[in-house]
Amino acid sequence: MQPVVVLVGIGFLAFLAAAVGPLYVMDRFRDLREPTDPERAALDVLRREAGLGVDRVAVLEEESTVDVSVRGPPGRRVLFVTEPVLNDLETDVAVGLLAAEAGRVQAHFATFRAAAVAVVVALFAAITTTAVGFTPGFTALLAVGVTALWAGRRVQYAADAHAADAVGAGRVADAFERAAERSGVTPVTGDYSTWLEIQPPLGDRIAALRRRADGGE
Image 1 (cartoon, rainbow, N blue to C red):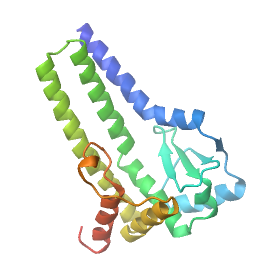
Image 2: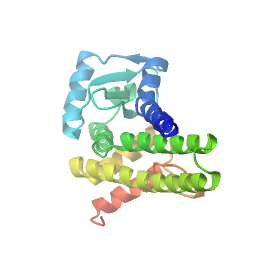
Image 3: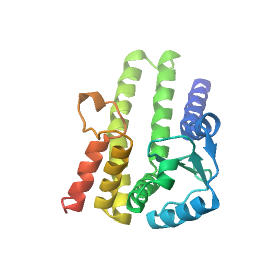
Image 4: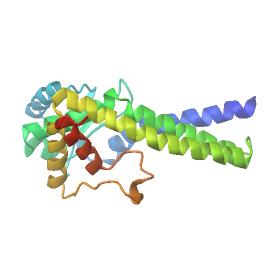
């Protein structure tokens, strides 16, 4: 029974690291500041329209790219935004990006990803400690990995669908394209190089939103 307890403990620690680690890294290793009162008031209006609730807001200083992200578990969720989002971005684009993050929260994307990491780490630990045989362990690891990749993409598309329902699919797609343009990034579509990514390429997400806007989904 003891090896099982150890493996469960390893999985639990991996889950915590994946769930809380990104927030810790952002808080400790990025240059952050509190939003000014006018910035906070403007963000509150945008967040209400986008349907995004968080526990704290932090601004990434000296960042020229457009970036909006939510990190942290329930009760400790923090919205991180770059200064161009506050100062230069059109309202519709900001709302679309915030709605996309609200969709990820609603779809529990971060929790799913943390759970997938925990299972993979626990299985790997079971193989390396010979708690299970190499062949069945590797087979299980491969099956879990493939399933997690497939399911993770479904969860992300579900998150985008939540955002589309909240503010409109075309609005979210426009926001993704405008944010990519402002950041000097070209949205790519999936190919063999993206097969091992749990999140679908931005170009594929935009295409799915466009189809939804046109009544195709």
